[in-house]
Image 1 (cartoon, rainbow, N blue to C red):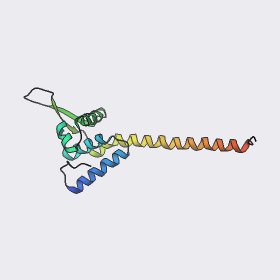
Image 2 (cartoon, helix red, strand yellow):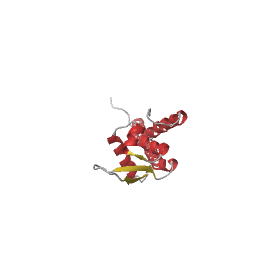
Image 3 (spheres, rainbow, N blue to C red):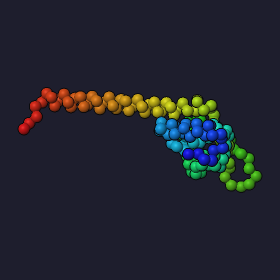
Image 4 (tube, rainbow, N blue to C red):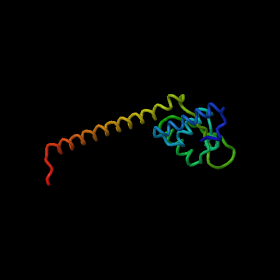
Length: 139
């Protein structure tokens, strides 16, 4: 998944597994990769994240915006001598476990909604079954 991540093999396997699990929870893949990359590599520029995460710049920007909206990263401007767009350095605001909490809470809410939906379906099916038993079918 992340051939460009320069961490040791066991850590890379854990990184990939964590990203896959986060995606299973409903997190966008590029957001999961940027979040875990910032954990493993520390403060990084957008270009660093493109290289380390092996994702395109627009996907890095989308991930950074999502993480910023959730108040999970800190960004600071990098002073540049040349013209052009200002560069920023990004880092996680919290440790990884705390950074993952908002995503886990959202997944728990979605799971509860699914369970409530299953209960509602079972009630409806039960009502339909009871209705069919009490009313003889017309021939």
